[in-house]
Image (cartoon, rainbow, N blue to C red; front, side, top):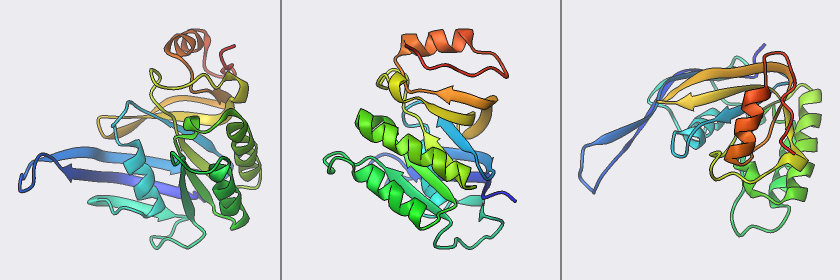
Length: 207
């Protein structure tokens, strides 16, 4: 059974000044399914709606249309999903502490936003925790930052099962591997990585 199912989600926000009726569509029929043991990378440009998608998946925002199911249920159980993000100005290790608590509560799905903003040591500890969570049957959806703004995380690369891209409000499969490695890296490093990667082969982090 899937641990998270997003079906045809749509979400828009008001744009412009107060009283303006214009809207900006962020999600347009976005669909995604997470299975037990998966670590899925959600990629996309800045402002494409990655955080909005994670908020809808966590039950923090309600989509205008579409359906979110947690382990097959429409009602979100308290232990179904946990949204976690790096908060600027927070104490060192705060993100890892929240991740640890979510795993201790046996949350089935971890929704992680902007892990690349955390320190290197905290990233490594968080990655170890996410792997342990996957080994126990949980799933993780982790949003990666823009390539041009991301730091080089080659020393703390994250093994993922697949990566998807959010663009123009919809989700598309980018690549799928049994042991793919993703790292938020510099544009040059990502270009080298993309050029030498092929289906079925581990994606090595840039050195």
